[in-house]
Image 1 (cartoon, rainbow, N blue to C red):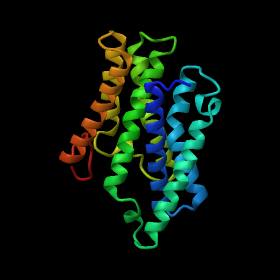
Image 2 (cartoon, rainbow, N blue to C red; image 1 turned 180 degrees about the vertical axis):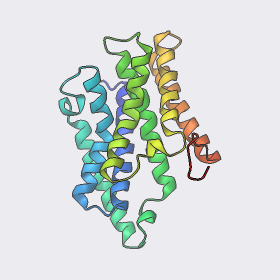
Image 3 (spheres, rainbow, N blue to C red; image 1 turned 90 degrees about the vertical axis):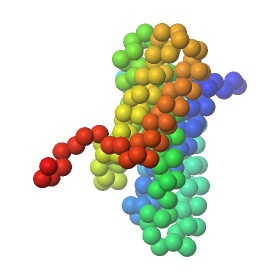
Length: 217
């Protein structure tokens, strides 16, 4: 079986987002079942929304169970690692350090943003740049939004470090390079992946956030 570069993006995104979902569940004090469910919806939620939009039913998450299985395996490994840390550290936020959570979440965002754009390009609407970018963003942020809502938190995408903007820029980079035949598909995916990570790292380092209305301002 030949593994394409977009399959590699799928695997990276699935593992990274499964870990971030498990981390949020652990911080909320969920049991192993909750950790598995949150990891699963974080890793597959965006892709399921993407597939429904482009009419690919049942979604790939159900056609090819490898991603569901990979999510659950990752979640349970993460559970064991966090359980070992929990025996030594009695602080829920120290179980998964913020820096580690940031990198797993960023890797998942970047991988799924370009993966969604690639799926849009491979669909019947390969020249529709708007749809390609939309699918990239939905795939990138969809699972995280579901995760945060299930954990009763304000979705990360609405409050932290230009999260959605990074996904949008990465998906747009990939889409433009593919639609206008500037580069091959693999190069476009790598470029969008790198751009997403670059923006997220800059935003975190310089504490960039989009404008908001704050009380008393």
